[in-house]
Image (cartoon, rainbow, N blue to C red; front, side, top):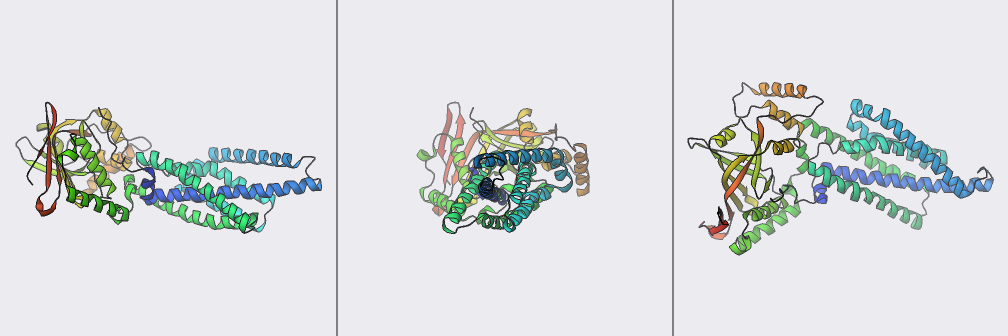
Length: 455
């Protein structure tokens, strides 16, 4: 069977970061953190080299050569840093995060760096640099490293793997590159010394500090909302100029060229994947939104908007409460129709087919990726049944929140997924003069056949 297509897979990691304010702020924080830290390493290396030469020349190096003096310093320095980092990690980090929160933990390192580089700019002595950098590195290896990983906890699974990788590699290394460029320019053209680079670091740390405060507030908002997936599109995708231009191109191509049998291909699932990708790249909000139509045993129809949660050659997935009205319809009459409408592109897709329940393992796998608030909401809501008032729902939510405090929320036995197994898929492309293109694929014993329908 074909591997299930990831709904967000059409976005590369860099676009994912650039289109999400929260992820972009984390990326910029990493850039400035590395820029400041590596500039600090240059400052300390420069001051250590100067002090080593002076100590050997004055006979205060204890009989060590200049290279031995420098080696001894670095051995002592990293020994202290690693010990401090270990002690902070063991006895401080968990308490800071538990009692002070992620927002406070985020600003600890920039505040330490701000004080350290301000002192170095005023008094560029080896002892000042040594202890300032010791405090900075030890905090970076412990508190900052821990809180940096915590920031990705409310992200979607794809963001944790793809966007985080882009941030930890490209953006972090971009800070190193900026440091190298600034050091080269400063020493070559401006004759800058260690204290000047320390003053520059003070300015960079202030920007870093503003980012840390903003990220802390955004993290708190996301966690409080109980809907981490909101961070996928903090900014309205309709405001993206690139998305608008892309949608105009796709719209123009579709209206002018239309949908021809020879270009549509023999596989409707492949064509759907192409159209769905176009919808996402065009900045359409919730391109996975679809109308799900069902009918009761006596033929009474009902429809509602749902979110597609995956598709492959086997069909289209969605998840719901097994005690809801739609689930009751599907139990009595296991057939359904789906409609996707992407008005910006003048496109529509209709799917008709039989419906099957997903295996519990597949439902469990998806349920584990849902935000914790949504998991608790699944337990609290007896979907489609009457309730006295909203307070009843909120009380049920709090009861389940208390029941599962400190543990993972299990999959409710009355909740899971369905798959619509397509027997017919129709593609509609808007054209001029209402002479629209309609191609209907029908599954028979010999596979898919396609027919053109009158608009």
